[in-house]
Length: 607
Image (tube, rainbow, N blue to C red; front, side, top):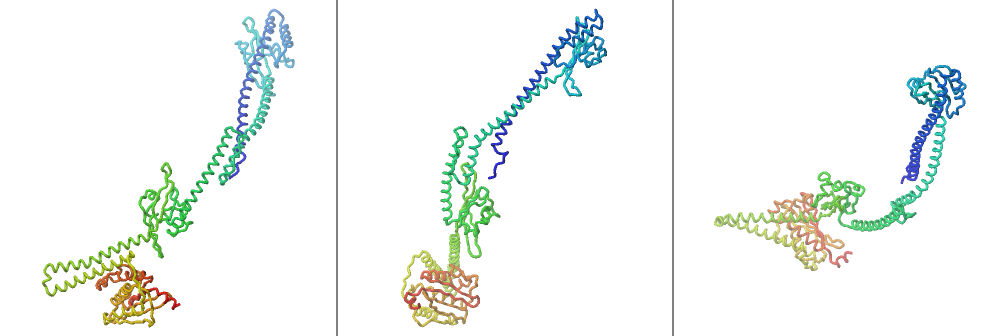
């Protein structure tokens, strides 16, 4: 995890905020205090000036009033004496002006030259003419000192007899303010230093448990639940630390329980024979077991975190929302050139307690064999229905003709009866074959095995066909002279050989040849019967042992075949523990092979 920067640390933030709070508080208090103090000092300064001005006005009024009875020189001397003897406080200069705006005295000895001159300042004019006092704040241009200038009329019996022009310096007031400001700044700095020290201590007290909890959270994220947060006290932070330790313990228990359930689920899913796919709420695959990968013919790396509709090949037909509402099973054909696979997919939606969809579970079942059996059943019913309907339709037609009077025609009636008899025998054979197949399928039969010299047994069957065969087909025997003993059910094997030879004779052309041979191997006897008939196309060769399968259906029916002979033969040979197959070349003929296990003595002799 990225380390916290210095200025992002809660420790530093706490100290800075604490210092800023104290600084703001001190500034607010300082500004308020300085403003109030400045106002009081200025007001006190004004009161002091007014008091001094009133005293001067009293003395100067007497001096100026005496001017009417005495010599003029005496007034100036009296004013000068008064100004010289007065104890000034913060007053730079006092000028006394008579009623004619002429300066009759000044307190500044260096400024005696202005005595006798007229003053035209606005404040003097107001004082002499209107009798109004004025107060102005003036900045001395050379020094920058702040000066207070007062112009006040001198009255005697409510009559204006002169004016006082007073200039006072306020620097003492502002010097005091500077000293007070320095005291405030010093106090603020000391308060901030003390606050910073206390803030560090307080922040450390608060952030130390939090830092410990952070370390604990990191340890928990890595799966370490054994570490505990240290308890420094039982205040709110201490209670938080206790709760954090309780949470850690509960998480450890929950993780152990979840891990146990996960392992159980993983074990169940792994050992399931059916395929299982799980998705997240967006339809992307988060879990897929090996059977599902095998059934779909894909790898885990190709489909992990990919949409489930892509893995199932449904992206052109459905979307994930459709799958969430799918209540019926889907049948998927995932057949390849090598293998046929039919899958049935059932879907189950994963929802939380409030009904929000969290994902989807798809279970894949291999129903290839079931579909194959169902298809074979449908085909079997259709074939049986067709095979029975054809002779029955023919019989009904001929019987209807006979019922309508054809039985009286001596030429037609025997022919119609012969056809009806032939079709009846055909249906009997068909039903007989079906019953036999039914017994073979249900295993409701037993083989009556006897030891037989197969060479002699085979000759007898061939002889029977050779006597009754068409003279245009010849038999060729390539059988060994030695005795070959097998344990077989003679009736069943006879039926197999009869079916094969009958087919060979049916499809052999005039002048054709049927060959018979035996081949003795290590543990079985191989019987070979070949003809020179029309042969079987390569595409049809694998299906000739299927029920009701015929390469040339029209010709087979004309020859009286039911399409079940080779299927019955296959069942009987496999019941004996052997195998049967065919080889053919179109236009050149067909060879049927089947094997029978040798008796133990025969195997030992051959070994």
